[in-house]
Image (cartoon, rainbow, N blue to C red; front, side):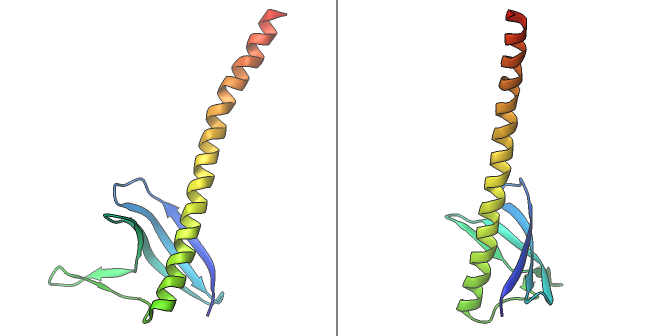
Length: 110
């Protein structure tokens, strides 16, 4: 079994950092995973539902550590990649404003 796609929507909330969907073998999708900022590190929470007693229960989850590690690595790698792209885009946008101002300043000097 291989993870063939990770789709991620970044969030700006305190602890919730992203919503995630993963596809296995281009054939089976699991939606509702979350990237959560814990007390010491990020972790991947499995999709869950609130029970009548108020407790949350996973509705899909890996049954061994190897699969959990594979899912967590794929999700957190994609999360890091998306953050880097977002930061790069933000930095490029910030840098483009002074560059335009310099061009305009040079035009006035001539």
